[in-house]
Amino acid sequence: CRQTASRLPLSVTSKMKQKHPLYQSELQFRNPLSQRAMKPPIQPASVMATNPIFLACVVLATASAVDNVSTNIHNRPEIGATRAHKGANLGVRPQFSEPLVPAVAISAPSPESWQLPEPVAFWTFQESTGANRTSNRTVAREGYVLTDGDPTHPVPQSTAGHGIFGPFSANFTAESPSQRLTAPRAKAAALTTGLSGPNTTLTMIAWVKRDNGVFKHDTRNPDWTYGFVAGVWGDTPPLLSRQYALYLDLGACKMDAPSYSHGAAAHVSNCGGATPGHPFCVTAACDPRSLEVSDWHCLANVYDGANITSLVNGTLVRNGKTNPFPYPGGVFDPEANNRTGADFDVGVSPSYGINQYTGLLGGLVVYDTALSVDQVSQVCQWPSVGGP
Image 1 (spheres, one colour):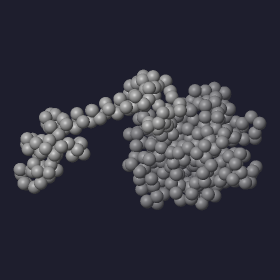
Image 2 (cartoon, helix red, strand yellow):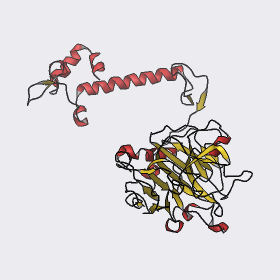
Image 3 (cartoon, helix red, strand yellow):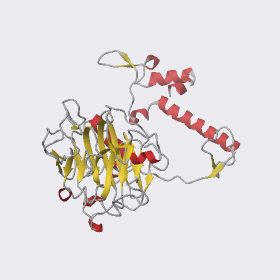
Image 4 (cartoon, helix red, strand yellow):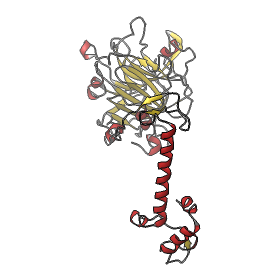
């Protein structure tokens, strides 16, 4: 507006300044309290409507806009029947045009569309060695309790300053093949029987800081190692009731990518046992990134009923057909197939001693729905924003 006013004849602008009480010499406003020269404040619409400079700007801008529109219509007769292609230079007639589409009012998404759903369970592992680890009921729906699967080899509490949702975390040292935390199937129904069947969707997210990467080796495949973080994964006879799990360094990922090492993997099974045609279960999404030692990482297993997806730190790196891994059919239901279902385990699967994670576990959250990538990213940021 100042630029437009400066283009007016000097006599016009001088008269405007003289007549309007807000202006004194050189467009300065004088504060009666301090008597210091200040720039004129932004005025309410009611005042600006009576400001002759403002009115002059409106008139000049309107005249200029009408002139430009008239010129463009004269030079481009297609205006009104077609609109320029998105990439076209408005000063040049476009080579392509699209039919004019009537304007449609697009409403902003409702808060419910981007708010996170309520998790089933959420653990922060602040409890001392030997104590029960209890899900946070202020955040999650269920207050499920994780207990030591082998009380003679409890999962230690980390030293202070090595947590992510507080000063502590759970420290899986693998001093025993049975060192784990567990929630019995019957006492954690929303995580076990509730996450089974053909229409199941789920998300499990864990904050881990792996150690030097020494995981247990599979005697059948000496080059393969396994680091079971958490899940419901009955992988040892007579169970054979695999449902879902989150892994580090999953040996099956080396089938398609021999260079895969210390990466995250999301496992889901709809048959409970070995994948048909294989001696073990290979239905997993494999993230190709190698996770650095002693760094915190946010790992996610997302299953939407059609694909298994592995995410790291809230991001998806596509990895051919292995991430996401196409896998319709839902999650195995042991009870419907007359099999004994597995418990919800953390740190080691029922194949005690083979699939065992070593390192820190700072947090674990489970949802009974498939989160979007953006939602997973939001959850992964919880530690940096003070929690959920």
